[in-house]
Length: 99
Image (cartoon, rainbow, N blue to C red; front, side):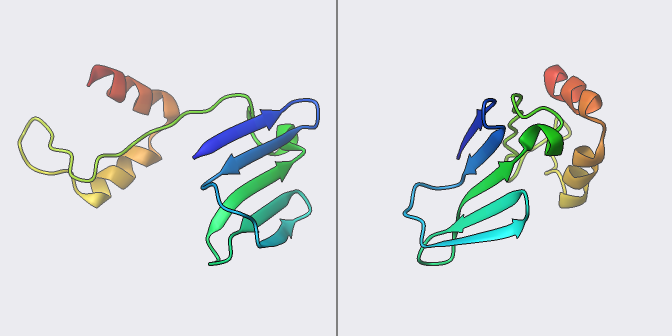
């Protein structure tokens, strides 16, 4: 995945894969979705990004391991993972930094 932001045009692009675009849909006046020949999402383009995204120049990226094992030795459940994602961003950062 690749993310680019152009402050001059105020356009944010999120590329999910590098495939030729076969179909383009305007989901909203400010969102454009590009698809490949198999219907897979190739790119999301957000126009006027500074009005739609809190800070288009900042990216945070998390990878959640499919079967993380906490110190107690039992796998983390899906509901525990969802609960973690519902925590405020600063709390999640604190927890991840402690790990």
